[in-house]
Image (cartoon, rainbow, N blue to C red; front, side, top):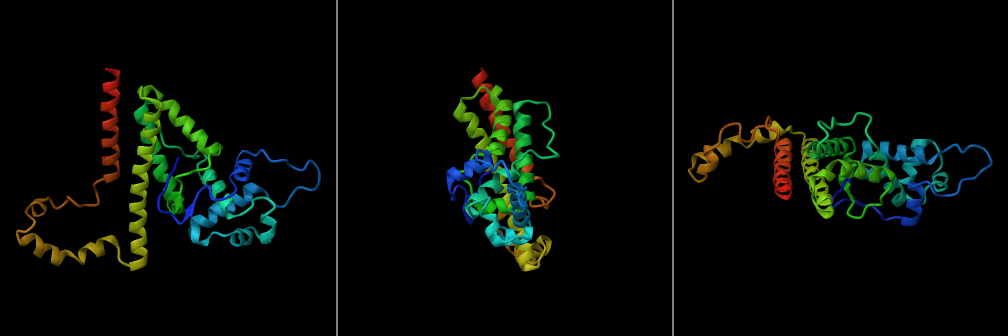
Length: 254
């Protein structure tokens, strides 16, 4: 259900048939022989850990093999390459959280709120997701389980099927934008060595002169907390989206 744009990698770039076989565990398994030292699960988990700590730029079959203490060629017995591995990683991180967001009263609005907060938490746990273009996702069990759960709870909205799906896409797009902004702020601080407060403080003298010039009367009239860090922009925007959907749902019921 997650989607990113302008990423450094693209989902579905590997062998689609082989990826689906691995996601849905439909391949043939050897019935005899010693238990393999590696498993597909261990490989995918190691790849996710690597991406979490080093980003996608640090992800390669060689690095995953090193993480597992094995040779690179041994990985190819389980997964064809990096493209297929990435799709397995995307489905893996969408598995239900061990600490899910409270769904509230069970209504459609609470379901979409929970979806938004769970998705934001997902991006915070795995920032590399923002580097992946998922405009054409490979749909595995975790992704479909999540979609089924949300659609079941928002079906009572009474919207058409395309509108229900669009509601989920709208929430996801909003969360992606918020998550990307937060990630960019952290990256800017890391690269420049300036905290957010230090960055804006450096501009205060010039901004005070600009506000006193009379050229920006509306901005000069704003309260001191207008651009403060205490205001929850994410929550404000989320609630306004849900308010808009409330109006549509009410109109359809009327």
